Amino acid sequence: MGAMARTKIQPLGHCSRCTRACWKDGGDFRRWNGTMSRGILVALICPDCQTPEEHIEAEVKEATLDYAGAVPDAAGRPVVAPRLENDQD
Image (cartoon, rainbow, N blue to C red; front, side, top):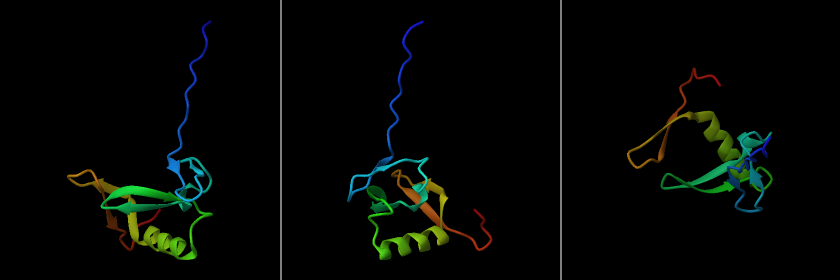
């Protein structure tokens, strides 16, 4: 029997401040913040590096925007719609 191929799993990115790896199946994945510029993700910030203001801003956006329903525009940038009052997670 031949050797099994090993698959290297890559993180989604690293914190722009402390270089901690961001894993989709990590317990705190939903608490990471992304910084967008012109519709392109330019930075990730782990929960430990977020300022209180950044954390509150992310909480407000999570409550008011439907990230799961984002669709790309003509340039491939995600377009996020507001959540409707009766939307459930």
